[in-house]
Image (cartoon, rainbow, N blue to C red; front, side, top):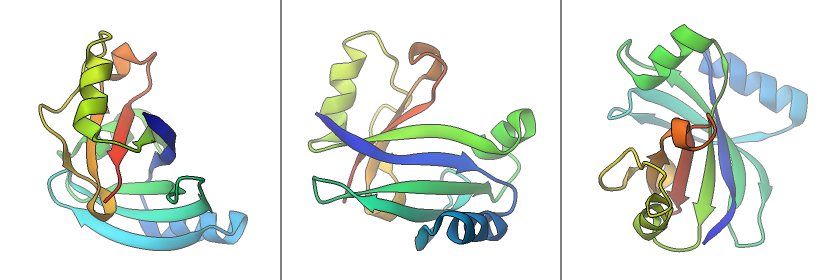
Amino acid sequence: MLTRIDHIGIACHDLEATVEFYRATYGFSDVHYETNEEQGVREAMLKINETGDGAASYLQLLTPIRDDSTVAKWLAKNGEGVHHIAFGTDGDVQEEADGIAAKGVRVLYDAPRRGSMGSRITFLHPKDAHGVLTELVEKA
């Protein structure tokens, strides 16, 4: 069962400047930095609030570390802004993805991959989700 908005992913050109904007403007705290070589991004997770299931809601700021990454291509086409929305599950992300796939939504990964902070993730095709790239997250 999907239980929360886990995070909203925002693509940006300058990670440090974008972190500072969200920290200074909205008071969000930067709690985690990570480089994901597989996805070709450097990211910062900024905590927005705690949620009822013991997790939290975040903004995930993403900047590419190489030109062939999905985020680099997205930035070149769309510019900075909202890249995806991620929903958290209280169960197994593969089971959640299988249930959604059974309803006709394409899942982009054959098996979950490692996400931020040790989570397990997969993505749903935006063409099957009304134009929204959607991530499913099982927290570590």
